[in-house]
Length: 543
Image (cartoon, helix red, strand yellow):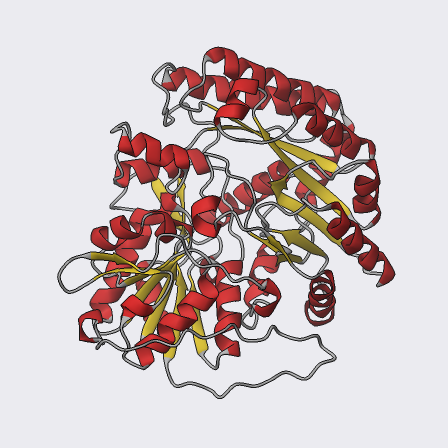
């Protein structure tokens, strides 16, 4: 049924369903609904020659699926990445870029013919041209079904996405579980989409309609429930040695929070999640970990949170509960975190409970830059926390960014000098990234409103280049004071220097890395993981 065919009516907005209870509790089984839903994630896109190629489980889709199943809906997954790990194919339409995963034909062929609604996951704007073409092709084969897009990209650019992709019918904005459920309820009851909070679409008069400016948030995240993983889905990643950060045999994606309370100008979180930050109930998180140990025999959990550790009492309680329950697994924070509560006491508990990889995100060492990007940190305090983490013998990474629109070479050199200092002090990884004006960020809006940035395929693929090719000198530069080629060269030199210092001043790491290169599903750093992944893909391609 097409959008134009909906008749006006009053929509009753449903309250969230109860969370998945613990194993010891009885589960309420909702009446099964007849609507056939397929959830799709397109292939991973990367620049030819890249070594950074993160194929990770789709935790966002898993949460949406879990929520829908609580409401009585059943879904089919077509995850091109999971079903086509290490399957590399060249994009004929976009020279210089490759995809990992199923081809378009393979994806379309896997969609059940009885499908009535398709939900596309779109997290990374650098993959938009590929996802757009996939959506349009899918619409060609399924012209009478509702196609919905959700995730960071669709939230940041809903009108652009809808007009650039005729096959797309609706965008779900922000946190997707409740909104997508409400949309499905409206669709099955033939009610007016304009009454559904948190969506955007183009109506029959070619007018862009967004139900509200700020996406709604689920206030009690413990009511969302646990993610639902299809049978043998996670095993695909474990067997291939794929995970978000460092690797163990069976790494489990995990969330302990939603949102971020900060408003960094280079981050799209405020638009995607608002600034509402919510931590899960500790007991619910512990029950979920125990369930995964029992069901999957996991060896590690990886926190995908935007900002996992902001409240000392919460992380202390979490660690003590891990100890009380005698849970002996590794856990890591590969996304990055802040340092306000990571003092000696907390870091000692992290180490005691098996935290094996900790990423800090200072971003810059320039005081002026930290002010401009609204990165509300105390750099000296973060530095002390980083060094204390090393004293606790935790593997540590610090993420740095150069090339913000306002920066001078002086600002950049302060950041680079800080990176070298951290490598010399023992930090295991000090990658240097070049600023990317991601859609949905404050800086992106400023650049587009000022006519300095045009949103088109070339722009999206430049984001892909920055995301996947850390050693390229051909980079995007949003700063008129800086030469783009010089910026790329400086980034490459200092990034290699940081790793060189890390290994030369700590030669045991050379032994560790060589050893881990020959061990299955074992890496102590992201560099080791990416190198192993690259060699494995090249071996498969040559065989």
